[in-house]
Length: 403
Image (cartoon, rainbow, N blue to C red):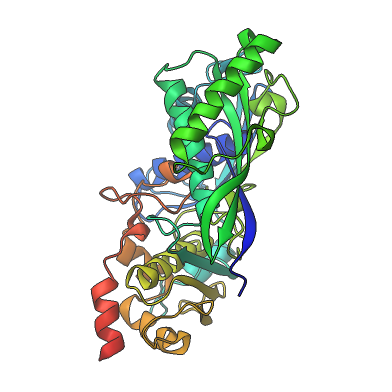
């Protein structure tokens, strides 16, 4: 395993068009779970210049007529939730405005063929909502047990969003991207070698003086967010490298649900199964099994059993039990712990069926819109939110391994 290298991750802001789509899709998931904790949702969103389009499959008690179609009242409520989401993000631009953008809703009833594979019936346990592979990852290089490159990429954009919403500055618009490149020595990050930030801004900054003001502000954010002494020289700091960035968000580039899966997970430091999270209820193992894989990997590292841990799960549609569980400790295992032993012990601590995962992590609740920007992992558990970030398995895991 290499110990000295350079690695890069990126993040995108809540106003990035793909993230706008993710937040809308998860706002719909939360709405349906508020009405029916066992609702089925697969909601895809397209956003572009002055237009928002929903599509997908749903099943939700109380908001569908006898034929399964959404009632007029439900359609009105969904549209309001969508517009409120865009308003919260901050889009009041001529090219994309929460109040005036055209809206169309093409959500329709879930396929009966899919439903029969997932539903419990007789002696049949609830099955997975789809086939697929899911990964979880944890590393001890940050307190949140996330890769440092991704951790700082998220924190930089969260700081911009805070300053924009709190009106600390008056020139930031919602769309932004960050990229952090770090030097690793002996397996740990020690300094930044390159920093990139592109942010949409008001017309007041569309001149040389304005761009200089923006650069000074961004350099201050970098200095505040990164550890002391990590900032690279000016030649390695890139702020709006193409120049003026007035036209942004869905007006500048169409956005779709699920296109930022590496930003959502581990910044490229770990494999990804390929399935997106946002817009899906927790019967979809693309989401719930990825959450529990992170939960298990984080608890392994938090217990001091390894410095890095990757976990893979796989499922077949309609089948409850996972087809496989794979653990990789990347040669960092501690105290004689082996991946083979963890593969035996972990399923005894959490039942890894779709229903078992949802029950253990409390996933049948409207907790998802908050996940849809700045990463699904590395977040502070808060009541029902981000339950998969808890380290409450540490003691049970240690006891099981010594039993």
